[in-house]
Length: 214
Length: 214
Image (cartoon, rainbow over all chains, first blue to last red; front, side, top):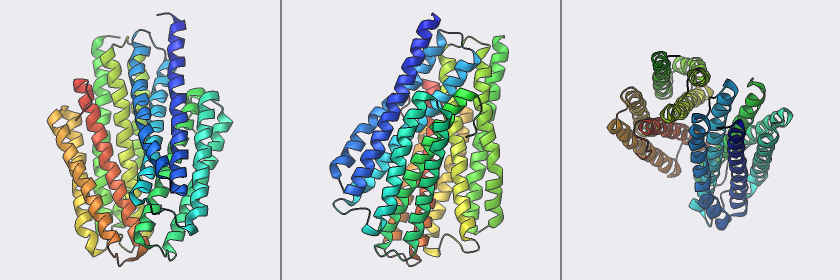
């Protein structure tokens, strides 16, 4: 196999990861729309779209042997493989977490999951997660280290919002224990979504520089 | 490089995964002891031990290029690589989830996280998670498909226990919203721990049979 067609295969791999990143971004935006707009259709759409992410992860995993088996790999190729697998795993998981949010919405529908006093903090969390998702796509496309570092700041914002949400819930939440648990778990899903986005960025930086600290 | 020394490298890889599995098992047992015994020392020990799992995952990831780069891999070798990376990732995550449980214990210490009425369901969850952890180690060592399938049953038990816990919390929990949120999140950590153990088993079966259904 010529080096050219090997490079073509790597381009295809990168293309699938970029598509996964767009899907993961659409998933969290849809989940947030469902959550904050009490929108059943949006929740259904997030759940219906998720198998594509699962299938693309499987595609990435199936491509790896194809890429390498007809090619004597060098160390940097193999680093790419390790990173591509971690990235695909993280992006698939981001889709799963958006699905978890959508399912909480459906479980309570037509009652909304986010009572008025929690709307600001949940909106902040949703916006930060959407920003993170977009930046993840940029980092994947550009391998830009600075963009990867900024992503860490958005992650801190999600973590801080989750802390504020939990403080609000334990400081005399008037909507009952079920509502408090729903919100705590939904906050946890956003927190994990952001963590996984940071994982993706970290792998991209590792791929570019060989060091993993952000 | 001779085939023999390649096999030696694979043995070393399998050995590291087995060690990770033992560590992940010790972590959840320690976390459960901390949780149910309100044992600060047990919680500290779980947190102190976790970097070993992180380091072993990094070791696995570093071994992959070493295993392959001096060897023309065939398709089944590369399948092993994909599986080994997923297994290492899942086992590291199991350790993280045990750490999350331990941190909740420390956050509330000396107050216990599990009030009397929740002790039975949390004990059941802890026992099922410990069984899953042990079976995961067996599956890794023996690649036994039947053991892998039984692991799915323990996972169902953890999920069912989490459902019962949540029902109990929303049916008039007298210990306050903070306690309910702590328990809902701790239950979620056990649920994810069990999911990851199932992931490990699934990868082992995939490795053995080439099909991933359990």
